[in-house]
Image 1: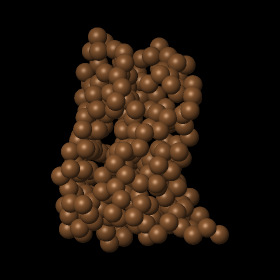
Image 2: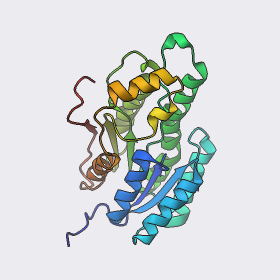
Image 3: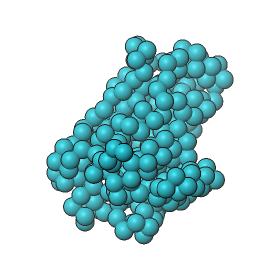
Image 4: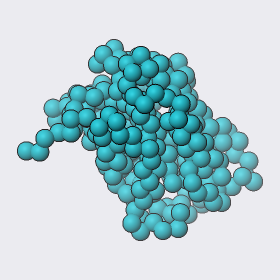
Length: 251
C-alpha cells in the first residue's frame, strides 16, 4: 500500500462551499489522504451526508452551516474547526456563484450576490483565518477561482471581475504574509459542478451548457490540484495552478 503524503496526514483542512462540486470532491479526496476535514455550506443536509460518508470510509470530518456572506459565520467556521481539532492548517475558499448575464440586463441583485460570495467571502476567510495562522506561525490559504480570473467575454463581465479581484487579492496576500504562511490560487476551466444552475436566464443557461461546457473536468481533478499544493514541503509554496479540460482551447 502506498504511504500517505506526510504533509497531508493529520492536517486540519477547512473547506467552504463544500456541499457539492469542487468543495465536496476536495473534502472527500483529502480525507482519503488522511486530512481532518471541516466543511461548511448553507445546505447542512448535504454536509451531514458527506461527513457520514467520510466517517464510514475511516476518515475524520465535521460540518457546520456556513454562509460566507456573513462575516460572523466565517469567523465562527474557523473557530468551530479549532474547537473540533485544536488548530486549522489550511483554509480552502471555494464557495462561488456564476449567474452570467449581459450587463445591459441590469441584474444588479445578481452582481451584488457575486461580489458578496465570490470576493467578500474570500476576504472574510482571510480575516478569520489569518490571525489563527499568525498565532500558529503556519498555515495555508487555497483560493479556488476560475480561468475567468484571466479571461472575460460577453455575459461574464461581473463574474470575471470578481475572479480577477480574487487573483489580485491572492497575490497581494502572498507578498504580505510570513514565509511560514503559504498562499495558493487554483484556477479551473470548465468543471463538473452546479455553477450553471445559478444562471437565471434560461437562454443563457442553455448556451453556457451547449457552447462552453462541452468538455468538463471532473471535480476530483481540482481536488488533486489542491492536494498537490498542500502536500509540498513547508518551504515550497505553489503559487498558482491553472488547469483546463484538454479540449477547452478558446478561454
